[in-house]
Length: 221
Image (cartoon, rainbow, N blue to C red; front, side, top):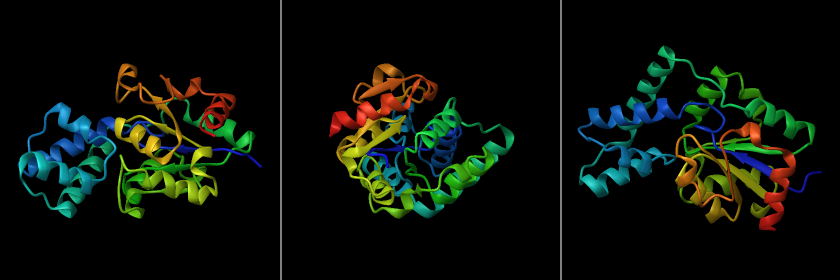
């Protein structure tokens, strides 16, 4: 039995959905009368819709109905996906196969809704490859709080310190740090130069081997 496990974020790590997600987020807010800068958008990358609405209230002093925003954002996202092509992130399928071959348990943990996660994984043919999925709807606090990663560790029956998180956002890296987990950051959503808080930075999941991940789990323990 393995003495460590891997926890994957979804958008920008498993599925190449981040450009669609951020565009839908920006348009939904614009339709609610909130005009966000690129810095605003990136500051909210990886957050739950509730946290995004809290950010808007704090910065713009405008209250946005969470359910209305969530529904419209999801509608826009699905429309954008139907006009484009959602693909798995580079290297994810090969990495999952390596983990299965080595009998390393893994899970997916995302701030997104379960509907969005299943939508993405179904379209990319990856749903059956993730037996453990934790969504932002299953925890009381989203990233940068560690709750979603700690919940995934519970499902994996692993101590937090034995889990390695793979993320693409600054909020996700911070959530992993607060959970007491090592973190691999995948450059793309943010440039590699911005990901220094992670333990290890790669340009693609194809650069990761099981041995790399094992060493990261040992570093925390």
